[in-house]
Image (cartoon, rainbow, N blue to C red; front, side, top):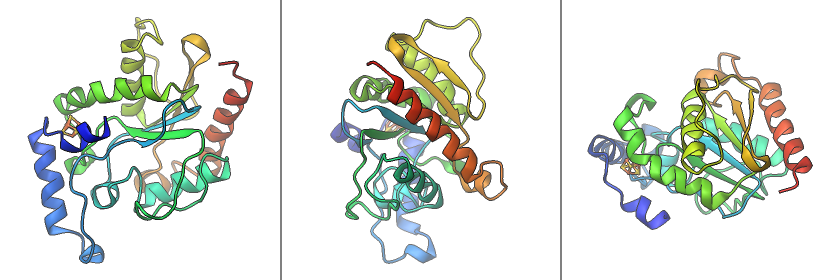
Length: 224
Ligand code: SF4
């Protein structure tokens, strides 16, 4: 799937946006060769934890070519994953920095960096088959959705792969919210570790730790 994703051009607006960011660059990264295309999943098949974000950061994953790598959101995510034993190091700077996930994988519901971090409905729908396929490949016990869009997309994809009966009313996203799925699987919601949330204190390290602690506990208690 990674090869297919890298070549994907289903969303012309996003493909153009990724390429134009890669040409113009940010001043601090003028020497870098930007990735500038769709970013594939990170991690292997059959993991316990699947972390689900929204989309690559314009100067983070769209620059480095690896999920949540090279920006502030990634600093929060990997620091916390390391703390709870889901990665071999707390930092993620480039595709060659030696990072390895441990029994975990990371994906986004949209694999191209969108203008203003806002993919439209068609773009999310174009990317949905990759996401549903990712669920099957990762086969996780716990899915951690970072933000309401990831939460809603995960519920839709969980219905696609028959891990959840289509709900009459969609369960609402909240930080720390849990939803039990079939076969002992869980969906847990967390605020996204974007600067918008971490700089304003909407998401604190303690709150982020708490959803990872719960995820770890659910994984340890699982009989899958
Ligand atoms: S967002 Fe997804 S479907 Fe759209 S071009 Fe990127 S990889 Fe393809």
